[in-house]
Image (cartoon, rainbow, N blue to C red; front, side):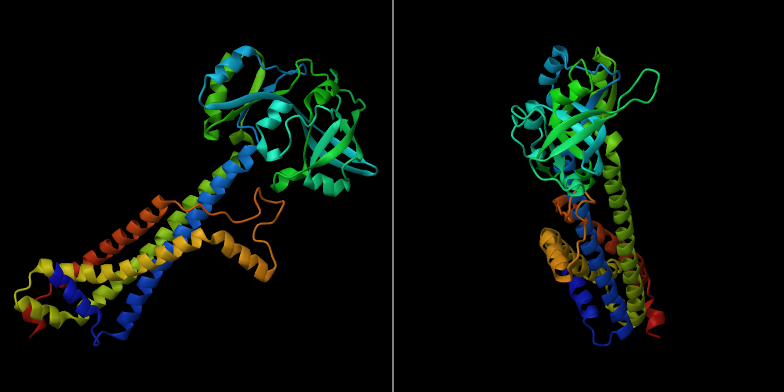
Length: 406
């Protein structure tokens, strides 16, 4: 093996090597490095989006829930509470009321999705950043998303009117129910949700909607949100009240599916880029075999075996792959680690935002570097390089000394 490595290095460093072969060889090294660099960086970004999806979006949207099927609402029975407390998959279970309506301040109106919450709900939703007993002394208070606050131009202490639709048995038109509320402060959850979210006291909202059972929804907060679909059905089949079953994959699952789709497309596309770079290794080695035919014939005449010649050209191509994969992987890892700082510098330098604030559920490009992605990318590039050397190595081993030296 040492002899094969020595000969391969001599062939690579030969001053007689064609400039075109050197160019093709260098382009293959650059292509492999670029493929590894971009692949590691983009996989880290996809991992970052998935992590932020868990930590940001899934910190306040329901993982799984029951929705009342009747106007009387739904209540959290002791049997469900006991079952959830003994289930390691469930972190918390609580009830709340949700309603859609219009907020009016003077001549301005804004659609809003109001959630009536209690201390138990706020305690399990740290994303709202509110004290659990905030509505204990302010039963007619309301907190609104930053987008609503901007639209209505309100400040804490202002009075706003909440208009709720009135349902009738014969579906005839009725005047909406109106509640006067005091604006207490602004909440910011990120993304478009800030344009319609609002929270107020559960009892006040349930009374306005004439919900006799006290709530319209029962929410399950899970240790692993991806168990939501399975768990809500397990609990739903044993639940004594008539409800609809829902989970976050039905309401916001498209975000996770988009992340997985982009990850798959990115992986396939950049693996093909690395494969194209490996084809350049094939080309450069085939031309190198043609150029070194006499040297190969001399080595065979001196007793070199076919195995040795195959090893020489496999190592020669592998060195190019190792250079490219190693440099590309190092650059990819460093870029993934410092991506937030790099993107922030670019935004400051050119005075624009890569992710529009208020559009996405985060306003920065996240990165979550995982060792398994780095190792898989590096070794996949090396394996493809080795495969690319097999045909040229076979051609080198089949050189006929008698013909080549004639």
